[in-house]
View 1 (cartoon, rainbow, N blue to C red):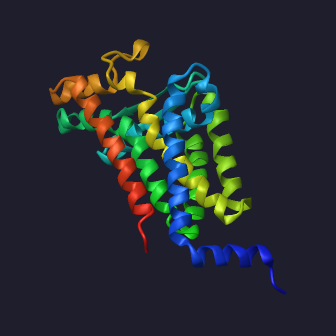
View 2 (view 1 turned 60 degrees about the horizontal axis):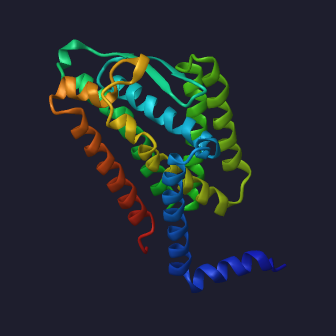
Length: 247
């Protein structure tokens, strides 16, 4: 028996694949701009709060996983209700200043790199669904291994379960859009922390990541902040270009 909904969807993609792609790209670019603006508006943080927590998770996981890649230890991860977080790690002194500098840079660059991977995964429904499953599962696994703050022990697995639910229950088009939207949110979260990138102090936590980079890699913290802000924008644009390139 014919299924009108599926037949219409198939016909739409056969007759106008480029129009469908452009419409989706326009929407996502608009969402990215609106998100960046909402970060700066009073009350905008409440609307985007779940993405703030996810971006913080990407950020702190960037620190910890880079430490592991350099032969060190990722000891624990704490995420707090105000959207901040801290990763505790240890690395060998034999790496010299390069090691701590790379670990410091891996935090701010974690969200845009993760976002780009999610956007690129949206090129097919199969990889989009698989990526949602991997992300949701990794959120749950990280809770068991590293997360130690009371708020994080609730928020991170909840996000993981929601993402897994989308990957298992949502229609394929929704899974594709979800992975793209999460990717864009991760990339533009860099601009939520612009003041942090151009700050020397992280308050009670000590030096900011860019100040740590200044300490170990010599160039001033504002140079590193600007470099990472530009790199994040380039990563977003290039990942969208590749994801929407005609096949």
